[in-house]
Amino acid sequence: MKANTAQGIAFLYALFFSKAFASHTSQIWTSVASLAFSIGGTVTEFFACCIFLFVKHPYDVGDRVGIEKEELVVKHISLMFSIFKRVDDDSVVQIPHNIANTLWIQNITRSKAMKERINIKVSFGTTMDDLLALRKEMERFVNAPDNRHDFQPEFDIELVSVEDLFALEIRVELRHKSNWSNEALRLHRRNKFMCELLAAFRRIPIERPGGNWGPANPTYTCELTNQETVDWQRTKKEDVEKTKLYPSSTPLSELVPTTPEGGLLSPAQAMYPGLRQRSVGSQDGNTGRRPSIWSPL
Image (cartoon, rainbow, N blue to C red; front, side):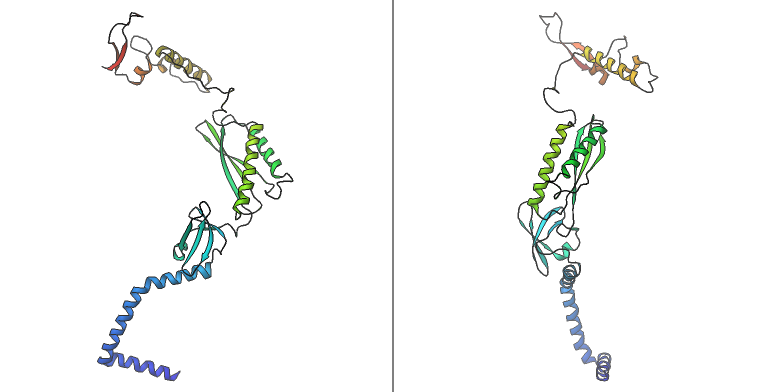
């Protein structure tokens, strides 16, 4: 211990009081500093990889993980990087540990029983009784003897939102009894559940937004004249005004656009007040009238 202390004191004395020794050591320190600057990134990466691999250790070989919304299976782990196989197309992906250290890693293999949420849009006319009936039907399915080993007995349905008074968005929550590390088993269970869910929709029944297609819900098209369109608009506004909880104080005559002479405006005139109707072209031999078009004033 005393010998080491004496050697240190002698080194410091020579460094500060010997010009020749100081000139030689300055070259050494310059080389050391340049070397540290050149390999500093590599040393930092090395220590980051060691901490990620030996301290954090988020996965093992064979684990199914989720990284950046990608489903991957760990195939090989080295000191500086890991090799994965994608679940969707079996392609090989290599991710350095210092990069993976900054990402969210979801380890599916280490997870316990998992659940998934399925969002479905249904008809706006779906009632609470329909949703309760759907829940009862699916609870009967997940608690059946053939399905008890695949699904947990709890089953929930949530009304998420009302979309523009046109459709209801519901969320079905399915709870598995295991994780999804086995992709083939997960797909088998999920397909079985989805088929039963579709059958329950048909039994209740719960329709799609706008009603199910078919003879019971046909689609029609028709052509209306300008006068027929204005009459329909007036009738529609009268019906809406009658059903309002707080009727409008504006006279109904002001709600329907009219001409200065008191006549009804066509949809084109109501939308573009600066249009006027004029007759052009040759006389129509069948009606004795000239066809009319709309043009700016």
